[in-house]
Image (cartoon, rainbow, N blue to C red; front, side):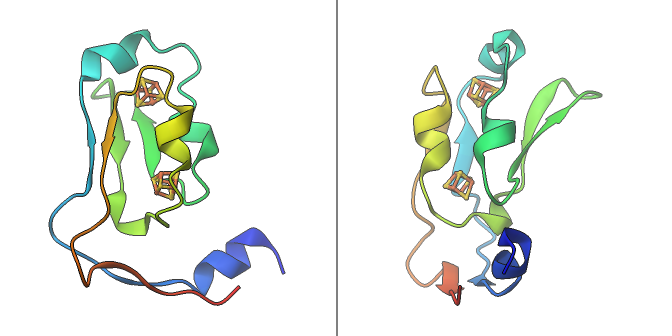
Length: 92
Ligand code: SF4
Ligand code: SF4
């Protein structure tokens, strides 16, 4: 089974409250490789060329923690979703 097929099987109880924030957009401007846009299996991070900032689609976060390690400047403020929210079911 391909990763995208596995991800399709994950179910979420989406919170309206964002559990991922970028601490300082100016730091991202200077970040050469923007590893957050490459390491996240759920493609939560995307570079918005028009707004010159990282956009965060927190709703699809799989709570794996990879982005926290990959950001070279600890510029990602990440916490688990509130109790009862986030990933609710995994199969794969
Ligand atoms: S890896 Fe960190 S500093 Fe670099 S673009 Fe992503 S959030 Fe910003
Ligand atoms: S915790 Fe994992 S799935 Fe969630 S945003 Fe970070 S890398 Fe992506």
